[in-house]
Image (tube, one colour):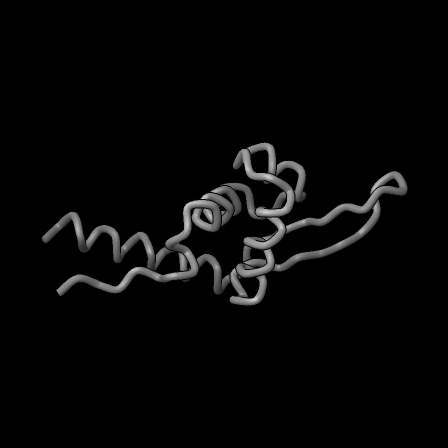
Length: 94
């Protein structure tokens, strides 16, 4: 039987955000936007969904008097990503 894919991570942009953060730990909003080629509005919505799921931690601060939003992957996010990858592997190995 196939494992169910996590619906939170089964979105292209949310998966891209988590994949990026898995490799670097944390990044600011503008960097994530550049790397994913997402619009600011769409990225903001997807970051909020990942934050509500507990997969990332969002910190708002100021850098040179400008707002700066930083996203950091949580242990829950790492576990969810690893489970998602294992579920995908189960589709390949069947």
